[in-house]
Length: 196
Image (cartoon, rainbow, N blue to C red):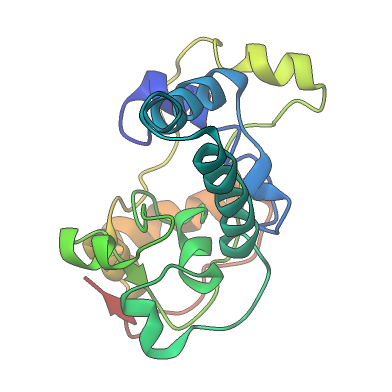
């Protein structure tokens, strides 16, 4: 969903909220919801009792509220196994992309090298485009014309660690990006936190 530009267009609705909170987990494009809902629930409905699908849906909804919650708990040693809000908010960060994909079990991110967990919150969330307010327009917005990306951003935890260590390849574009947004200067270089 994040790498393929066509799949990203139907997934970006989920990333459109400028604040990560418990309601944000329910944002999504209708096409994405149909694809993921069918892929996840069809096997259960076909091969198990319907109650299992209902239970799974309730667990998924509660877990979505949990990982998108505005809770400042790093989960201690559990962060190596279970995903929580402190880690998932980096998945929604504007300053780095392609990190922390796991929704329930963070050990997948640690094993596959996509885990990223510095010792601070991201500077901002949301998208680089102005998101429409009308829900019908939001659904159609996925089919707008493709334009090249306006700024180089770290992709993955290794490049993100380079940004936070002060690598000019990423700091200079980040400064320009923040200037265009009217924000202040990028925070001074920090020692990288936990990065795969």
